[in-house]
Length: 251
Image (cartoon, rainbow, N blue to C red):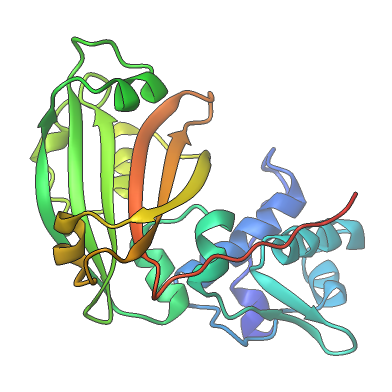
């Protein structure tokens, strides 16, 4: 068994589809840094032989990882972990900031600006399905990559659904991991939109970006496995240092 294959595990007695287990096992190894950009993955034949699974199972796992820009397949050479970049990561993947930076090969950092209950705001409450009397918690942070400002993110989340959330220190803790580990709530999907506008003075100072410069603003509504809104985020990316790209297929 090669080292690469040893990083992949499946359980045939688990009800989770085998292709999904293969896919998630590879993703987990990438997020933990065990698979690095440029690393060669086991071939379909090697995985079939090792785990006693059919080729279509592996083919589907690799096809989805390719479509999601996680791996790339080089004809005649095999499949390799793809070098990720911010231009395609933000709209194709759900992961916490530390995982993003690990894949990008950068050192993450976080500065907590505010963590407080906010007054009623229809633009925040309505997408989250909150009533006016429900407390909504704001976490405002500057994200850093290799000690340089990367983005400014505002997270909004219901304290009625997640009581005690204010006791966590989100300068050092991941919101996604906190929800999963302490509230047994996992984010399964997100609806994201992007727009551009001129940066406001406060954000310009925090991101060390020239005033009157353009920024990308990505709004995300996160959902749990029951398709219920969990939280909302508004993230500001400096236009001079970030661009986003998409691959579109014709059916």
